Amino acid sequence: MKQNKYFSPGRFIRLLKNDWLINQRTYLFTPIAIGIAIYALMFFIMITSKHITTGQYTVFFVFYLLMVGAVVGTAFPGLHSRVKTFSYLITPGSTFEKYLVQFMMRIVIFFPVALVIFWLSAHLAKASSMVVDPGIGIDPAIYIADFHYDNFFGLLYHRDLLPTILSIVSYATLLFAGSVFFTRVAFVKTLILIKVIAISLLLWFLLLSYIFFPIETHGIKLGIPSYAIGDIDNFKVFLYCWGGLSWIFFLPLAYFKLKEKEA
Figure 1: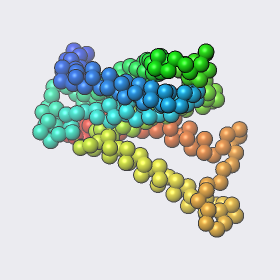
Figure 2: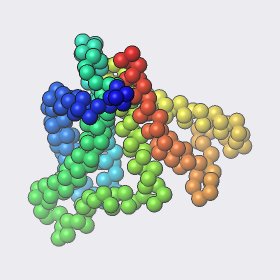
Figure 3: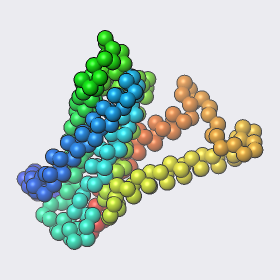
Figure 4: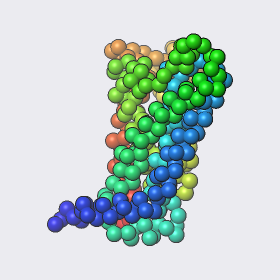
């Protein structure tokens, strides 16, 4: 049938098994490694400061996302070596199937596992700090709060919750697209690209501020005027659009770039 040209369940399962056989050590040991790393970081901070609030877990989580992003940013390992690229491209399977295998393994499956690992690491770090320093207080929870995702995201306003989650998705899809776009050290190059884009946007908005808000930006002022749009400001509107919607662009970009390589 015509759809078999793009997707065949049997062929997709074989590609999935083949990817697992080749990269099973990466899929098994990498989550363990980043779990140990974030556990060590939180444990050190806890026994040093002896005061961790729910809000402070945000810093740990952002740092953790960078490590998780390294896994997503190394998708399509067969494309990161000229020797392996040809062999990968002629592997039986459609472009969509090869794309879907990596998307499933690196985002759909890995991200939920990574969230569980962070939750376990946070609780283990707190338990370990209590053992090392039992004299921290009668009620340890007063100084080192328990980590729960409902409390973590509960710190956000209701309207900020969905854009925040979609921003994490956009971050993952950007790294995923970068792994196809760049040949070598794709993760590092993608992070550099993110920084370049952020600085470029900042300079662009700064230029627009000088053009459209000459009074507020009179003289040498690097700040960008803030103004209300309804009950939110212009910065949040930008973050909502950039973080919440950019994944719609990055996912097709990764697919068509892979298709271009195969062509």
